[in-house]
Image (cartoon, rainbow, N blue to C red; front, side, top):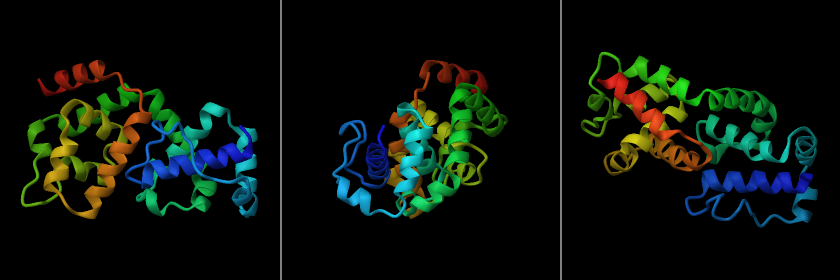
Length: 196
């Protein structure tokens, strides 16, 4: 990829995670960036450096890793990606490579000894236990996505919870889902074994 193409990929990933109507896959990662706007940027050296260091396949994943790691993707600044992007990407790769194992390990910890249904109950518009576990970094966003694929809890929470914390997490789950290659049948089996 050329530095300009890396910049366009950055903008497309940013739009995907911050704009409700933009879908990176539907629009094939296109953005309306111009070469003139790229040359005016003071941080274009960063995109030039990335174009030399990363393969074409890694570029989108590099930006996704940073957008899912931040608390609020709409407030992520390019300087933060420059500072912590490599670390975020390395940690993300580790999680992706051991996705089903990580799901099994995390599920055993937070489900064992408790009724799984109780983790997904919203009482008096308070956060359910599953969301609290995520906010405490006890489980990863990947596990939240896998559980939504299996149990479909996000739509239900969207109707019940109206606070900005859940809205941010809900958006992250929905926007991150298409980037994950999940072996859903294997994860269902893992969840059945833990629950039964």
